[in-house]
Length: 417
Image 1 (cartoon, rainbow, N blue to C red):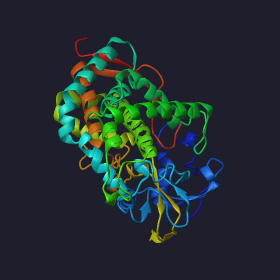
Image 2 (image 1 turned 90 degrees about the vertical axis):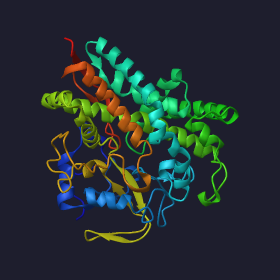
Image 3 (image 1 turned 30 degrees about the vertical axis):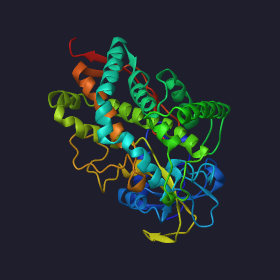
């Protein structure tokens, strides 16, 4: 099951109008372990394996010894992007590009900051922030839902949890957009905009981390800068300066990017189905299931790459140590083998074993926070909004890594109108 002419999952333009469902369906049906030959768009000019079925993606994600987030075989570089990143500078240093035991040791440090108990403590404050954002958005006619609400609430939340002053939060958004988008460059490349953003973000991070070291509080960055890992972390002791910097960069991106895209995708889905909005207004107990369906539908993180550490056979294909293996979460979340009518947005879908937050040891640290933010936004909208309509074209990000939006103009019709 080798190369299929016309398939190029490294071309961001393939994702310009949303998920490439025809390509995913072909791969799931005909080539569940697919060797993707390099194309002119492929970083490094190197091929890789694609897993697209739900069962296979979940299986690989739960095999961290077999599929490393750092590197494998004789490969010197690695990481979780299709393009190789240098081990010791990115792979093995970024929290999401580490293997156990170090990954789990750092995870245990920060898990209490996003635990259900901690989220209950901040829920009222987040709800108040959300109410203000929604009331302000409803005053605009129309509003840009992505900018005014979907991006703003997660940004305020992650700034608070990290210990970033609220007046600085929009810098974080600008820097994250510039470094994550492929608007002006292709995967594996940089642009002047992304380089400038990376430099500015690093300088800000250095100043902020120094403040946390000298005056720690109860935020995540204070925990990271003052922590001492056990010897089991290999090595023990404080996190390196680079690890601390990388942790900041990661949480800014993860905390601001993925949730806003899930919120926006959820709104667009219910806007296309006014009957579902009426159902939710009439029965608020449907909201938790609707939130899970929004997360599946959005599949904001399109893929994560791993590197094989041993020889393994799957569906008759032999994967060798050092081979790149890409887990296409988005394809898995629309697998007909797992989800009945996956291309129907169904707020009553049960069970809904989506992989929007990944699986295994790298399951998203902020999953509970993301669910809370999505719930608060839609709970608030259901209180205020009778119906929703489009007010202009939706602008998506150009990326095969993050299924995102930049603008989503909508018009809300109030309950009181």
